[in-house]
Amino acid sequence: MALIDIGSAVGGRVSCVAGAKTLIVMENPANDSGNITSIEIWAAAPMNGTNHVATFSKSGSKFTPRDVVTIGTVAAGSKQTFTVTLGVSVGDYIGIYYSAGEIERDSAGVNHIWGMDGDYTGSGEQTFSDWGALTISLGATGETLPVAPTVTTQAVSAVDVTTATGNGNITDTGGSNPTTRGFCYKTGTSGDPTVADSTAYDTGSFGTGAYTKGLTGLTGGTGYRVRAYAINSADTSYGATVQLTTDAGTSIKTINGVAYADIKTINGVAIADIKSVLGVSNVS
Image (tube, rainbow, N blue to C red; front, top):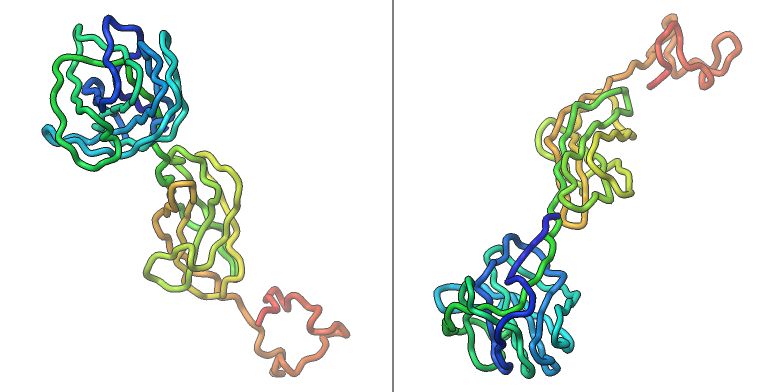
C-alpha cells in the first residue's frame, strides 16, 4: 500500500483563526485514494469544543463532504496527532470545523483556504467563499486500500486418470497477502471455472510466488477447464483458464476368451488383489 498525503505542513505560524467556522485547505490535495489514518493540527488556543475533520470534493466554489470524523480536544502550542479512519479520494481537500479555540494560520507563500461560518462537515454540497491566500496548520497522512491480487495460471502437469497437478503464480499481492490460493475446475472444453465449481486450495498468508496443488477425483478421458485463483481482503482474482484432458486408462475385458467379470482368481490369487495383468492396469 502507498502513502497518502493531504493538507498543509503543521507547525507554529504567525497568526490564528478563531473557531465556529468550517475551513478547507487548498494546499496539497490528496495524492491517492484510501483512508486517512493520522491527522495533525497545531492550535493557537485550546480547541476544546466540538471538532470535526472532513474530506471534501470540489466543483468550482461548491464543496461536498466525503467523510467526517470527530476528534477530541486539541491542546495549544504544539503539534497534536489523532489516529482516525477517514475516507479520502484522490484530489480531495481536508477541512475542519471547530466550535472553540483558535488554529494557527499564515499567508506567506501559501495557497488559499475556503470557509463558511458554522459546521458544514456533514451537510451535503455547500457553496463556500474563497478567503484568500491563507493556510492553517491542518494536515494528514494515510494509506491506499488493498486491491485484488494478480494471479497467473500455468499448464497443468502430472496428468493421470483421476489426478493432475495445478500450477499457478501470485505475481502481485494487491497490498494485502492472499489468505487463500488454489485452483478451480470444471468439466468441458469451454468456459471459465469459478470458486463455485470444484476447487483445490490452501489457506494461510501468501506472498508472491509460484505454487502447486493436486487436483483429485477427476474422471478418466475427460476434458477439464482449470484456472488459478487467490483471495485477499479486497477481492478474488483469477488467472487465465487452461485445458486438460485426463488419461483414459485401460480396462481388461477378457482373459483367454473368458469375460473378466467371470474370473475369480488367477493362479490362486483373488482377482481383486491383482493390480495388473501383463502390464495392463486392473482398472475398470
